[in-house]
Image 1 (cartoon, rainbow, N blue to C red):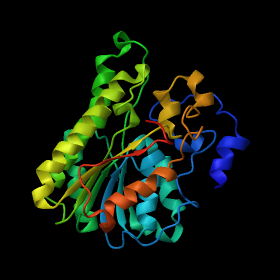
Image 2: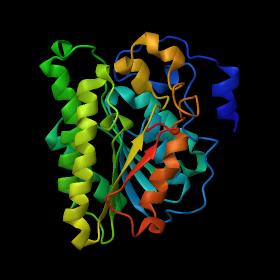
Image 3: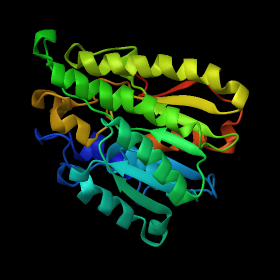
Length: 290
């Protein structure tokens, strides 16, 4: 409960801050809680072999930590420029750090996405779950200001890499495997300054439901998590205007943003055998916002 007190009492608003994308979590003020100490496991994923994208910081980091604590072996992908955060994440697991394998690389490249899946399978000697968290978000108030380069980056990281990785992974996923994508409240409630980002999140939502129907006969479950305002490096590395940061997340019914570790448990559940009859679902973690 310490983090909730931190958000609602100790820190009335976030300080303005700006990093160049993709940014580093370790430089944020305050540093997000990704469950290094606060996530308590109960052996829900023992023996499972997982691949997580965007696992160096934010929600992806919290998911990778939770998976490892729950007994899974995890391959974590991140950009080479995020190496500091990735190494810090792995070190935070202490005696469980050998449960995590780090594979840096750029998801905008189809060839790397294919290589990532194959290497994850070989390193883990199997593959039970693909969890896609990596995302790109840059605000622009006008469509005229969204360059083709930005549009390409947003779609390649958020949508194309998801497609490339999943298509490749179907060769390697175990029987009764699972896939978890990451959409957003932006899919249903888009912000005017996040037009391209919100568009990709809508695509992910539709893709998830359609793919769940395609793969049902293979007993591969496909679900998605839709976070609301979560305090991650995405927000300070161009994802939000600096003027929005002081009150970030305070318009939710809970009147605060979420911490990454508060989302991780949903991924754990969807990846676990407890969710064996759940597919095609979009699970919102939004602090009550609709």
